[in-house]
Image (tube, rainbow, N blue to C red; front, side, top):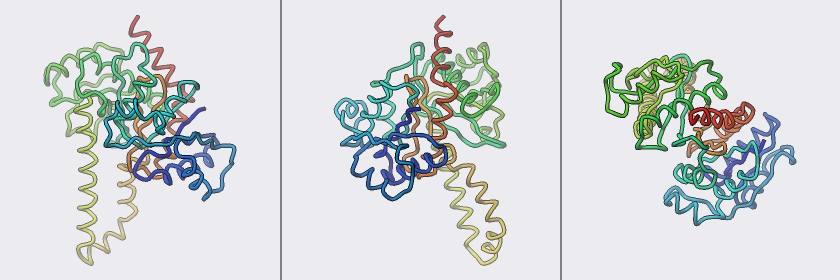
Amino acid sequence: MNIFLDAMGGDHAPFEIVKGAIDAVNEYDIALILVGREDAIKTELSKYTYPKDKITILHAETVIESSEEPAMAIRRKTDSSLVVALEAMKTRENAVLISAGSTGALLAGGLLKLGRIKGIKRPALAATLPKTGGVFLLIDTGANSDCKPEYLEQFAQLGKIYSENVLGKTNPKVGLINIGVEAKKGNSLVKAAYELLDAGNFNFLGNVEARDIPETEADILVCDGFTGNIVLKLTEGVVEYLLKGIKTSIMSNFKGKIGGLLIKSNLKSFKKQFDYAEYGGAPFLGVKGGIIKAHGSSNAFAIKNAVRQSIKFIENDVLEKISENAKNMEA
């Protein structure tokens, strides 16, 4: 396995990235490649005990900041941690890159440096979100704001392969996000996509309204990237608002504080369901390599879980299965 970590990407780089790498090496007994400024990485590594042969440093002098124009930064900053990692991936098999840095640069770099898998019209970004009794995959969450119906059909196929091989879902159920459950509801994009999904080789449940997402029976929810990004960020915002409100209410008086102590473990369990760190990161599916976008504020636990996610991605030949599926679609 060739698992690259962008050690300089993210709000808490490099220390949380390096710590997550150490935790992953010690727990999963695998080798990792940390990409970034060698002196900064070595300083962080010196704080830990770990098998020295399991971590390699690939030096990169600069970092692409989130404020930079993605495509231009990828072309100009050839010595950045992101570009150095992507270039190295091109010469190695079973390669995955994890980065908590600029989302735009990571997606642009994946397309410019690795390219699309033949037959894939638009690669898509997917996110794992909680629902009653488990999780579901939301795809696309922001890579493609403007879509055609056939793109959404491919998103469903990408999501199906990922769900089966990384999330462990058997014959995953697919839903289409819409403003109503009826087949004829929605705009022209969604109505045409409905027909493709309904006629395709999917366990298709039909349309899913936004209010039903938290309790959906679907394992995969498909939408254009504009809609998906709104759903993702609204979910994050509502959860944060509710958790803060609950905490404020509990701490407002003595009776609430006593009650809070009694239900503390229950609240922690509930909060854990919505913690992005539990899921690692969002895969960018459809490019010629494994790319996982970790949350910008990822801590070591999130990075460790992103490494676990990468291991499953490689062990279950997700890239090869997507490529074979794309060939079948072209045939």
